[in-house]
Length: 494
Ligand SMILES: Cc1cc2nc3c(=O)[nH]c(=O)nc-3n(C[C@H](O)[C@H](O)[C@H](O)COP(=O)(O)O)c2cc1C
Image (cartoon, rainbow, N blue to C red; front, side, top):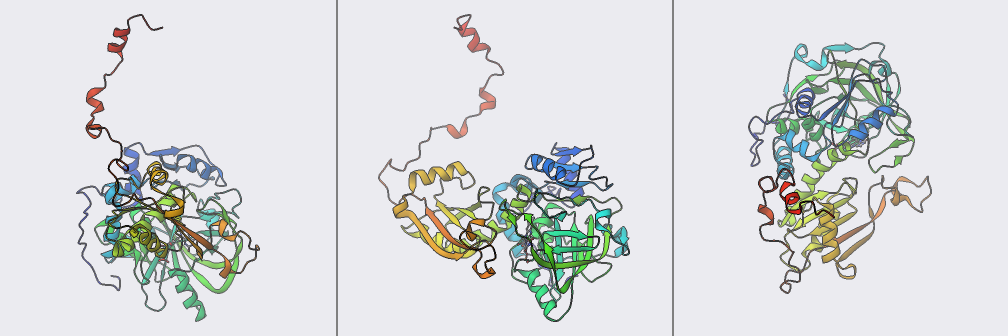
């Protein structure tokens, strides 16, 4: 068992009984396939660009399964969690309960359960000698200017060198040698672990886990304090402890039902060139020296499936959006209990633009909510606050609220020179290409209060509606053909 205590799952939003199709990647793919949501590509496809181009075309409509990727026997899947409704389905709740359910799982993690190696599917096949990742795995090259093949859907699991508690994140990983990879570590938990190990002159043991169910993928993106093991959040989302097994070449514990596990260590004081790579804002990030993983073992199921995420497409965007929305909602509600819902818009790459639904009671409150949102995450660049009659998940509704309830001289909040996302290319305008890191990502924040006044003259802000519009039953009303109308017109069609 993990070193943290078992917490019971005391939820107010419970998954519906029997609605647990996402126990493993395979059961989830079977579930999608049974409802026509899997497209199988039987023809051989090239790993360089072609596979990603096809997966991108299918993103958001069907998951893609490639059975002959680049001459490999291992199939590649992509896009199996690229709709908000599918993710809710995987959790067994309705879409409007998604954030609440994720939040409850993050607040009530469930300790994992270690299983013996001989029962762990992810260790059915073990390679420890002569590993050549390019030969053994179908690793695609995605975007036009990417430096080469990248692992984009690997859960990177490592232990805190100080406490031994595990952490899970997804990091882009460039595979530039048979057993050598470069990894992007932004300054969060994995980065902190690596720096602690490095300052002691030690490598950091890691496992890169490829091919797990949507709930374990989602849990990896939870925004938690350090020393909260995201595999325990995955357990809470599953409603039962996650079975884990110890790696064959180090002490990291990985989901036993995973398809593929690359074991290795991040080397101290070694950096190799990584990038360019097409990132989530739909621009490339630069080629720079990055930390290096030396591979020590590769284990997998007897017939494994390889998962790739096409960068900047819906699977990538939603994976980041849902855990963030859950955290942002909790953060806002602590100071402003009348915040009802939040949405990170797709046009804002599910990171930069936050829409907030708020039941305003007093004038000025919406501006406090805007300021609170800016403080919640440095990525937030624009905030729009709307009333409760506006659907916060519908871009047309948000634009309508801005068009009819917002005045720029009265309702606009602008903060200059704050910290923003370094991946937002507009934050580097006017800076030389080699600007030092502390000058990167400086961004203005913009908030729009698109709420109507608390008190307003009758009819001024009354939304037009037609009595009975919500209860119209078209199935019962609309005839199967136009015979009655044609009959009325007779032959007088001109
Ligand atoms: C598809 C995908 C790719 C990501 N790539 C990176 C990356 O290359 N480097 C990074 O630091 N974070 C990356 N992230 C974000 C982290 O996985 C995420 O912030 C995670 O919650 C960090 O975990 P931690 O706070 O426990 O360290 C990526 C997220 C997704 C969904």
